[in-house]
Length: 469
Image (tube, rainbow, N blue to C red):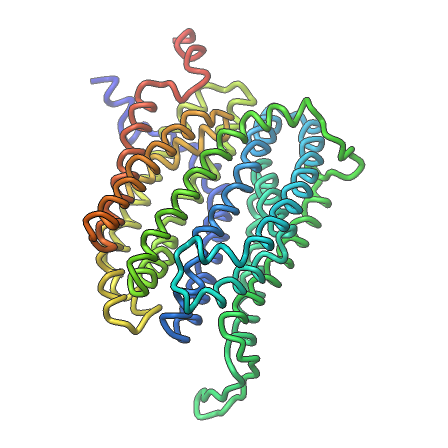
């Protein structure tokens, strides 16, 4: 009975709540702003018609593939810097920051060449309908012209968060979103007259449509990359000023050991998203549009989960660097409690407002009904997925990325992709079956991570804790 009371609600480690909140809320706000702009982009392009929405959405999963691969590189730096910060090793954090600059240059140039050279082929590989392939290819090409600053935004933003500075990336994200929205209004539509309180106002516009949306995003990405680079350069703890940009094996090898499994995981799962989207694209324009919009809507309701994951990764790395096993264990309990509660509320809200959200982005009744169905399905699985996100985030911060890699790859390819192929390509079922396979994948992750957590194997200091009892 005493043990049950000890683990009860009143005995949760509530003293960690302010620390968690300080790290989590800027990331949540940053992601909220990004999602808001994604909503606005989708809604604006949606007014141009279903074909325009499909053209933009057809390469979304390729964007995830590239972005998540670069993010995986940043995870190595996240683990190293968060642990160095926890151990109060300031010089090591600055040396690591300089190596992050080297990583940005290498990755940025590589992905610029890769994406621009393949821009014409990607819509073909994604099974985009032939009528919208040219516009989809142009959209993708323009979007990846500023690949170097986009890489800087991802890696440098992670470096700042790893040191506990989540506010700077948030501010840069807000600026990027404002620039994107303003330029969208100028570039997408023709010059037009609107009436506000009986006052007619002329709004200038270029009338570039989908291409205008791409140009607006590209400029915004460039602004964000420049700003986050300046912020890192001026940061009192992380500034690479005066540090050598030559490869430093003492830093790069540990970072690479952490990054490679995570890179393989993200590349493998993102490639799975590409295959998943390609199968959905083959179902036709209605399914492609419904899938694109539903993904956009769903992303807003995952904001609490990924905001908390950033805090979990940073704090877990700090605790490991400080060799504080007790704090690490308490942190896991508190983070999981908050996360599951947030995702229950988020999932309930998504279930309730799914039809309304779909109507914001499409006027096609078939798209709205199909999107509503799949959103309500996934809403029920959100608390389970949230649990997995926190455990995985903590393991990233501690540099333990092999187990999440294996689990995610098996779930993606053996459950989601194989299941979707059987359902859509063999039995000719619709989008609902594909999202059912996606949910089955998420539930598998919950089961595996739950077993891993209960067994204690997630915690590298569990033996130290057992000896101290």
